Image 1: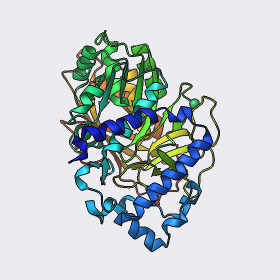
Image 2 (image 1 turned 90 degrees about the vertical axis):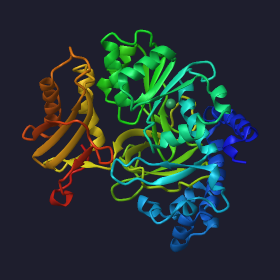
Image 3 (image 1 turned 30 degrees about the vertical axis):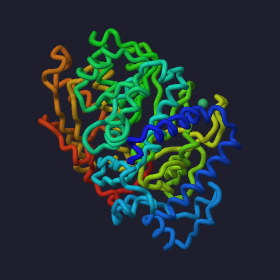
Image 4 (image 1 turned 45 degrees about the vertical axis):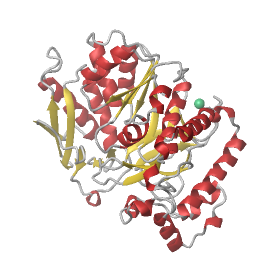
Length: 462
Ligand SMILES: [Zn+2]
């Protein structure tokens, strides 16, 4: 029988996860470290029986017995997106795994390259529980409170795989998770707002952009009955000004959850919100600086992830999340065990360049776009595409919803705000041109640069 449909199996794993959800608060550091090592050995064993990893480790001359603790992990080669390309499903899952017990999820193709991995029901539920754990820090309990989660449920996204493929078809889950409302971030903000108004959640989790749009609508008088006790933002860096705007509009607390397709939730802000706690019972993170060496505390580095749970595609020293993140090698006194992140700089898939050689991460442009929300209070702009032609010229394509907030700012004002933002980031001599378009392609990066980095002297990140 397909384990996805087996109620005995599901009840068993749900019970074990109810226990696991709080363990970072229950455990001391030693308990956590020995758990990590035990899980690592389990995952390494699975990796060695997975053709992709088996082949790479064999070429590198490492054996299973070389890896006993987290400290040994550096002996394993890094795994890149390219490594996945030559393998089909059989090559990406441990030998002997029943393929019908797995769901395929695809990573986002924002940089043009997407890849598929396979997850089992354990991983899907653990991903959700990892997320629910973050809400407990803010006294939201999913069996007592109502939670609205606004995910990316476009076809082929990981969340569609996790939720629509794993959670919602199952007859057991609606009764267990009856307090959770799933909404789609691809729907118009007005529709999402109506659904929220109907459900009146205690908690709203969503992507930064959608939360901003909802705040704009609420600041214009809509959604009067939406009074969440806390809001969680994921997906993009939350600009401090936008955060303030969302907080004041909903008169509530806002915290950030950091995650990735391949891993589920990675880290979250505890109540003081200056740092992020890594879900160290689920993942081990490494940070490699531009020289490929372990980053020092608070030094920006490329994220390398090892997943410590799951029966689908192993994720071991996975170097393809493509985020720039800095670790914090300190302890935080709030009682959560595990490692810390100091700062998340954003996705490194696409870089734009400034005349002085500074790198502008595409993800840092959200602070310009956010101004439309908190400064102009408009949700007219539904899509933005940015093309950097050269060091002197950036072209911006805008999809404008003319039906939305007719009293709002004019298109001319919108362009002025964007132009000013780009000039502040890139210098006043930058030419910024605009085009209004019907739609922008989903299969292509929203932000791209034609600047050849080898033609300039690189001078670090801005
Ligand atoms: Zn803390």
